[in-house]
Image (cartoon, rainbow, N blue to C red):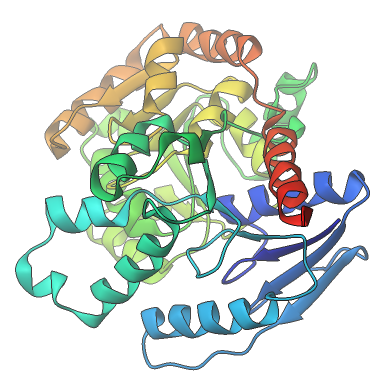
Length: 376
């Protein structure tokens, strides 16, 4: 089969991008051709990917998204058995829903002036094209938590909504030599034997709550704060957060390491994963941390937060978020003897659920849609 994959941008460290690549790899492994349409591609391109760069213009991001949608629709209208989108664009056969229901956010959290903006109207139109009752697009959901929102606001038939399990790559599972990797990582980055390492993973530092983590670190008792470090892996505006850490007097305790391909090493080397997100459809880092055996302190808002609770792999920051409560929970976790228990609970929980076969399940649905499209 000939499959077209459409995504606005590709870079190696995004969760959506990594899921796209893993699904595309499975499709290729089954003998299908993989054709990718995107506005930009960072990093190496696999030999078996046929990547087409679609240039788009626009003064705003939503205008560029709309222009990409129009051009991608034109580029894929003929010659493909199935068109799969990882961003909301027109004319999709299959949509991978990495984002929560935008209309729910607009109606529940935004005011009238925002709803009248061109940005809002553009994104709502793109979303409606996929989720309206008369649409034919099959939707791959990565969080069951959001299904009800699409049904409520669009009347989407539930038979078009397919919930995929949490998914991680195999290298995120704790290996037999996890202790050695932990020791080497901490030595390489100058983390002393008696020091505590906090880790954050994810791009979009404001959304992920890096400022919240800096405040929590700064709130620790002086002796504990002195031996605690925070590493941040991902892409974002580092400058403002570095200045913030410096203002709080903890500049030397906080390091921004950019996007990296060796996140699994840091998962094994850290003592706690912090994930105090303001908004999070899933939170793949939570599942990866559980698989690595690192206790978690995360916002209850995260789509995968219930796995942390069910697996007893850490603590959740309740809604509505309060910085004082986050500070209190961080202090508790850093001084608790339960850290080893939370760590082992996470490993045990992940071993009981299917976290490796999501790409195959997605490929099954893509193939099913392609076969239907082939019928005369």
